[in-house]
Image 1 (cartoon, rainbow, N blue to C red):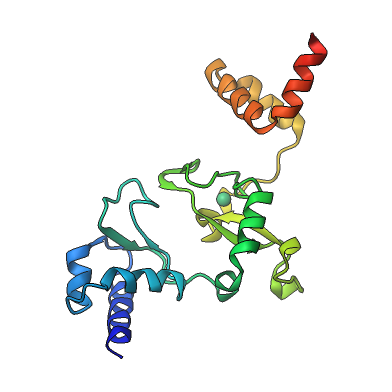
Image 2: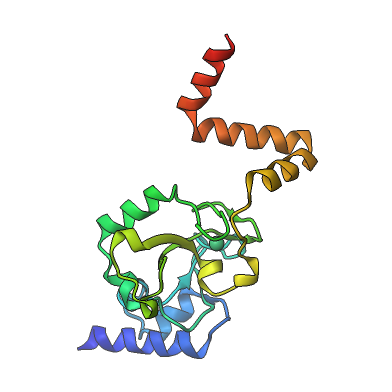
Length: 196
Ligand SMILES: [Zn+2]
């Protein structure tokens, strides 16, 4: 019963301090000084779905700092998805947000202070009859997941994409080339072979 008490206290404290960065001393005190306070924080994240951020998520947080920005926990369906399904969907989507193109673990293209963390979302919403089957799931970054939908772009046509690329600096074009070669090693080798 005692350990449950610490988790409840921590949950209340996080929800009272949404948006404020807290350090480990403060959270240990809130948990009653118990040594497993960090495990209780992890449970809030993994079992209750609270998006408690650390330096792994934000470059402006130091190790030992914690931040709950959004009081809304991750939906239960996402927590119920098996590790295998999650890994399958992320791999199929190339660890890339299917709305904005942000890549897992890299700074978010629209908010570089945030490291991109990917969630699993529905392609067809459940309210529209969509299922939790892997065929109806896709990778979505936390920025898009929080509904910052003005950031989300329609999938660009190749004509528009090429026009954008032509306007970019040579350095950025080479960076793009490197990314494409890494993504399509087989096709790159075939093209080079053809050119002799
Ligand atoms: Zn996104």
